[in-house]
Length: 93
Image 1: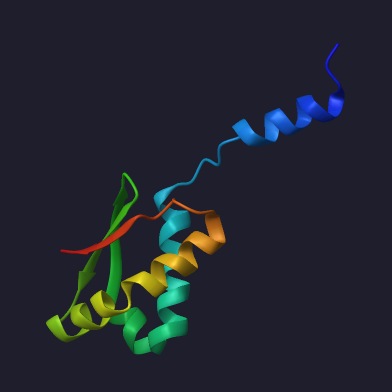
Image 2 (image 1 turned 180 degrees about the horizontal axis):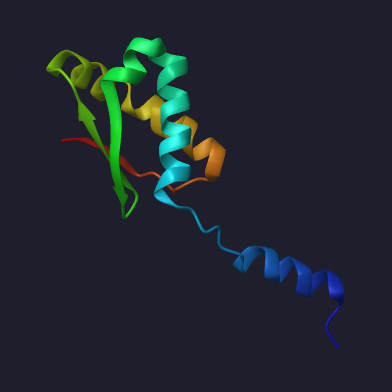
């Protein structure tokens, strides 16, 4: 007979979080606002999320370069919110 503790532990390990694009975009926008302020948040917009990649629209190449140079920090902060491995890459459109 299996113990309740083992069954609950096994269930926690198999539980998946159902995330939508809106969840990812909300956290992305909040982190961009923390890192770059309101100006950066208005210049960088998340377009869509697919297979661990967030696609971002940038209003200028300067903001695109700024995002590109800080992408690892931003991915790390997003993954701290949702769990490791949710966001694997950030790409500019």
